[in-house]
Image (tube, rainbow, N blue to C red; front, top):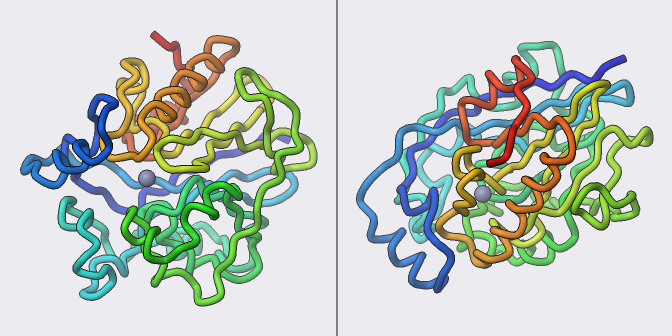
Length: 282
Ligand SMILES: [Zn+2]
């Protein structure tokens, strides 16, 4: 039985060009440029991924929630949210979209792997909270478990389920390509997570080894394949050089085999998934 991947668009967002990318450099200076930037990009999607596997349904990220446009969802001092233009329809929440295809979000999902807890990747947490096991890396939770720090850094802990505490993936899988360790998700080794830190500490990407092709879900380690080709990292992370190293590892992995790379914020991911278009790193 093969594995099936589906993409859900949970709205789209326009961001500052300086959030999309800036050269590595002083972190405070990069943030200052972001906060004083007045331009917007074209809308980019906010994707969540369903991976249907013989062992069950797995989610990679949960997208944004329509609740985010209600007053008070974010606090006024969450400055990053003043620098984006969000567009999400009431029926674009992950929970509702899963129900539409006959999946009960609280019961029919085995596990959720969260690349990182930024609000546009964890917005659907309340939709799935219940039976599904919810995982982050331990390094990410250690960085984001302080609600104040997480909020300042673009998460929205006050919207998480009250007793939320993720499980941690265990790094007891084999080395894969440039990664010296991996985190098995399924017992057959076909779905694994790997470390792609830099965008935030402990950021995870997920690899899916299908019969004849490999898929790599990179979360926010690369906003687009063009940016990945040019090794242009996001503009407001706290560890630019770590982010750059992660991008280089992704490219190195793709040189060794046929890989379809699917960023979370690029519309072309839908077409590439459909066409199984292999990424050829430049
Ligand atoms: Zn992010």
